[in-house]
Length: 252
Image (cartoon, rainbow, N blue to C red; front, side, top):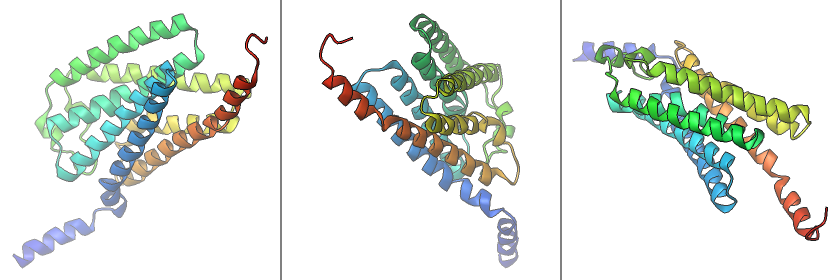
């Protein structure tokens, strides 16, 4: 018994502290922040209906679900259900929904409607592909403090992840570039852009070895940067609304 305990403690002592901390605590914090951001955006969309806020709320809700699944898998072991939630919500849908929100904010209505149909169809197909695909038990068992490899999910689900993440990243960064070109909310847009780059690259970064805890920390920082950028951009909204209310009806 003593020798067995010694071997176990010896193995644990070689686990990097960054991984041990990042495997559970950071995803939990990330999930809570993403959920709070989704609730704020969702509340704003209900109070002042706007398609871009609704899409962003869905995107951050997906991000929160993915982070929560990651925390659960790291703490209690990865199951097919946990991995599917992590893969679909965080790896496939989150960034695509953020990009759709940016499209509604910056593009013409007909372009936004077309993009909405394309994203909806792709999301449904992705959900079917992820939920019906087989999960390789051997590769699933490789998961621990870091997620199992994406190849644990068989089939062509990865194509939908590539498509939606590419669209989402391009749409968000394109909208930010448009705002920067017009010199609108420069600091806020730079914060959001940097944060989105970190979040969008998380699928690749999470495959790093001993740096995995650091990667999770970077994802959390990226999410906070997006939140800070949103708050900074929203600070001028009350002033604009007050000015609008003080303008006589029918004034040019």
